[in-house]
Image (cartoon, rainbow, N blue to C red; front, side):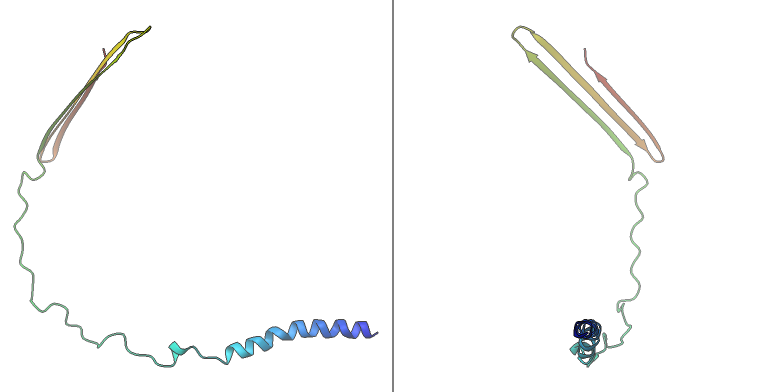
Amino acid sequence: MSSNIMKCGAVASALLLPLAVEAVALAQDPAGLRAQAPATGGSTEVAKEGFQAVGAPPAEDANDTSALKLSAGGFLSQGNSRTLAFTSSADYLLRRSASQFGAIAAERP
């Protein structure tokens, strides 16, 4: 019978211990909540100079582009295989206002 009483006492203390710890934790107030200072002084005056001046419009041919890229390369391997290889490529771009043309070519003889 005393073992049943001890088991009940252990279960009761296990259930009541979190309540006691919670009561102690709730009794402490965080230091940041005691004094609340305002975030700003309340002034809403942001712009003091007035309106900003309008800049010059972009030039009409600001997006016009012409580009040409050329590249070439080679590979030489001697020995039993005696290999010789060359490559070349070209990339062309032409843009005028809303129109664009592009061409890409590569050759490996």
